[in-house]
Image 1 (tube, rainbow, N blue to C red):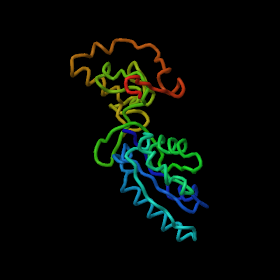
Image 2: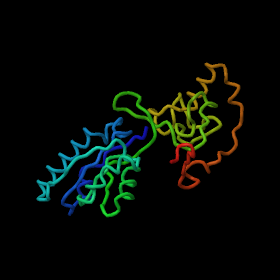
Image 3: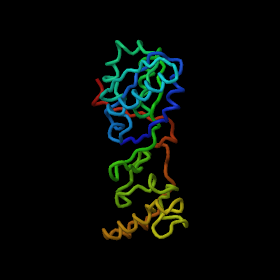
Image 4: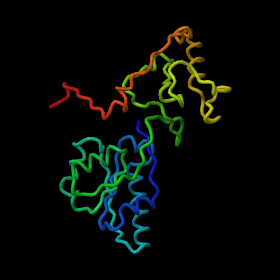
Length: 222
């Protein structure tokens, strides 16, 4: 899922300063799972904004709504009749949400309430870790199901660097060296010899380095 962090309240207040009627818009997608952008968080942020704006002598008019997803035109269309009633929309979806909203409703200023951070998963409640850099050419099956692109600090494809020590990355003793994990995993599966393959320089054209990407599924187009 896409993981994000809430922007500081002060930053959001500064963005919407001078805007009278504000909508806090949540998303029931990924950001709900990581507890930064769902219905509950919409209520918390809207309440905090009302209190802070009232205290600062600003109009406390802040309304709430949560869409099924903000990355899908079908759902953001639900706001067609009311979007332009607002002086500002604070989108607490991943970075796609405010962009889709701004494209669909160009007359309404849309502000992001979340900093989108990475694609990851939950290690435990309240703890998420990066697992994918969406490079567009998944090779994890060659490395015991672990991704050296996303989980190695240097994205090395051919073994650990000289900074790995005691199973940890040189950037922090709290960050495990994924190459240490890969070697142990492949050894346990009897596939250690597969790591003798030397991987050529990665073609990053399928990653973000190749420019904005677009995926077309002709079978799903209408």
